Image 1 (cartoon, rainbow over the protein chains, first blue to last red):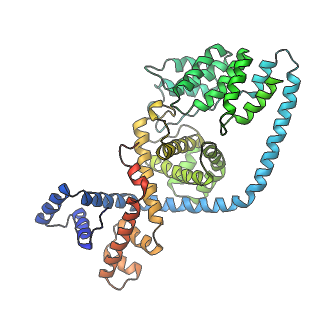
Image 2: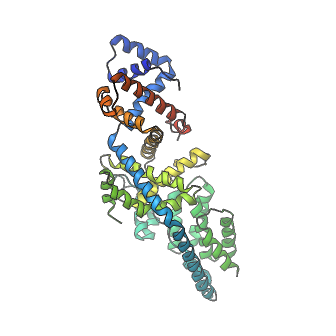
Amino acid sequence: MANFDENTNERIERYLAGTLSAEERQEFEQELRTNADLRQALALEKESRALLGDAPRMELRELVAQVGKAYHQEHLSTKPRYRWWWQAAVVAVLVGVAVVIGWLSQNPSSNEALFAAYYEPYPAYITQRSADSAQTDPVKIGLALYEKGDYAAAKKQLEQVAGAPGQQAIFYRGICALELGESTAAVPLFEQVIADADNFYVEQATWYLALAYLQEGQVEAAKQQLKKILESPNHANRVQAEALLEQLSE
Amino acid sequence: MAEPNAYIEGILQRDGNTIRQIYEECYPRIEQFILKNNGTASDAQDVFQEAIMVVYANAQKSGFVLTSAFYTYLHAICRNLWLRQLKRKRQLRVTFSADWEYMDRAELETNLLESERFELFWKRFKALGADCQRLLRLFFEGASMKIIMEKMGFGSEGYARKRKYQCKQKLHELIVNDPEYTDLSDGQL
């Protein structure tokens, strides 16, 4: 950005205030057409006024920053203790799960038991700004039914998404299928989400695909899928995948 | 957790207790989400604050109705903001056409871009000295040079004008030299 002298700055301000003479204004507008730096300076001036001159918004931003600072300062001193307890709790829960699963694995229907122990439906993320399309949009209706636990109706609704459905609809159809015990239908749906690779459900789909294989009784496929999850150090379901793989390998 | 619209109302009223409550209720889970997705605690703090400002901007629009739980809504905004940041910083191969979060695409992108630009301007504004911040707040809110001179305790309007020019130049330099300034131009995301 070019540094403008005080006079040019003054002209910009007077242009915006509408206090330039007709001749000065014409000259300024002529210069704007050929001078990119001047156009940028004018745009910056206008945007600064619009954004930083919005007093309520600025006050709220200050407030959020202050509250955030206080919150983080207070939690900084308590965090290590929190972490210690949290880690202890995780260890306790995992030991508990291992004991229960160890007992369940003696049972002939251990795959189903393992599935039940590890499976939980993915939360429905429905975000709406207005009620306008909530009544007609098949995805929104489908997710609302999903949230209520009516998986059969949700699945039917999500199948009606016209055109090329987004990966979100396909992913939730897969979960509905798992809920309905239709793992054979769930597998290709999760595979489709993973193959697309260009969406935010890939990670979740890799975990649910492993569970779908498990529900279907394809233990080897489930183990392979879990091993793939363990290749990702930050996978959200890494801890569960590790524990489940161990159980399946016993 | 309070009624979702009580949070919205509290944000619109700029109520510190509401903001605090939102922190207590929502921040730890948002931080976990950001940490799990290649972010740091500092990223989480920034995204969280920015998301509250997005809620504010959206809630001001006529016809705004929050039909989901407040946390669900805030989480979705944080996800969107964070994904856009990852995309800008690391060129992640992610597009909104993938429909990963079901929102009106055009509306979402316009809202977030404006909020992200506000955040950029605000951060750079906060990098100025306290006097410059005070002076520019007055100027951008439309105060005359006479008022600025009086409120700032300057000796003359001429000096007030000079200081205003210097502060504004500094601010604009900081903004334009921020890599995000170009990244957040129309059509970049």
